[in-house]
Image 1 (tube, rainbow, N blue to C red):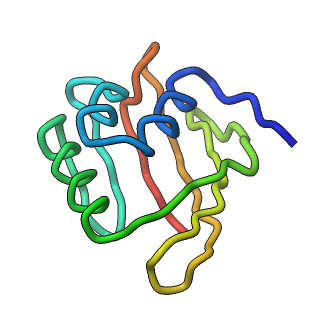
Image 2: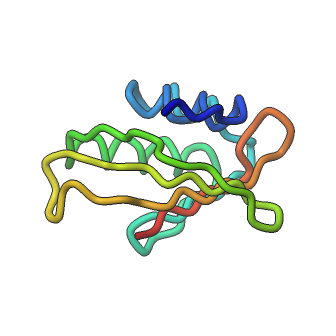
Length: 108
């Protein structure tokens, strides 16, 4: 089953396979990412978050479903890699601002 994702979200999952600069291009200037109990505010912090995550883990994400809840687009992604508990379904809650991501929260 192929899921049609809004362009900013599709761009995020494509960039997630690449590097910190590719990820940063998906976010608005004052974007916020919440992941693993930490909050990363602004593009420099998001770049560091991506670089840190990529250096700790090798993983792939396959979007499984998409639903809208209030102002958020929530993607369930099957994440598999070299981390404890792999594979796992994670929830990616995106808040969009035009063609950019304003906020992303990743949870179990």
